[in-house]
Image (cartoon, rainbow, N blue to C red):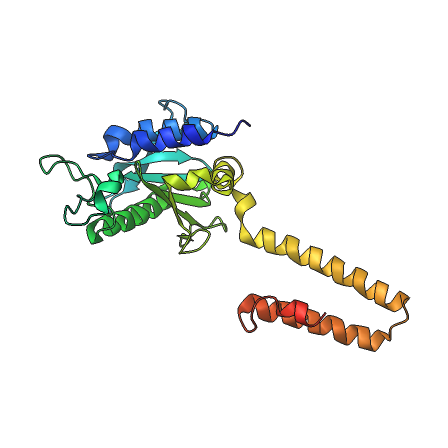
Length: 274
């Protein structure tokens, strides 16, 4: 897959960083260009048979009312067994003319007061609440999906032209979607697309989301560590070391690695016992 050039990424950011208004007017175009930039499969046009809309904009899910009737809801972008994505539209805060550094930051230009503020100034409490509501809305939509489609592992909240907030739930039960990979790193800004690892993360979400399941990584690491320790034990015994001493040494290795992992010992303590 051909990687986008730094210039192409910069052009994409420049094109979208001042977006504002209503997300329906720009969200679909933004996501189509995002897919093109990263070489991702683009959504298909919706068809009349709703169950066939496995990867499309405006996927319908029906909410049952207490009286037995139903009301349609619409997922902004849906890919079955991969993700539900909800878009919002914030705007950049106005420049503070009294701050001498502000003129150096054109990304802080805001829409004129007469134009729509979308879901609030980015970084404001109103904007944060809008993204939180989008997260809750996405979870509701996930629970409205037909059972036979399962529950996608990812929930994405996108502020068009600014960032993606990533949440994941890998059990398939549709439980609580937690920040991914962690609360501090869940938000991906457009400028982060310059990082190869971030681009690969999105490609995995689009093409193989369960490859990002931390439990699978932990299991792989556990197998590798077990093999390495077994090989070490054989090597030590072959060199004539006492089996009981070897066993004690390996137990200290395992304990130290566990203690590092849960925070009982500082990182790199393992190497101090070697």
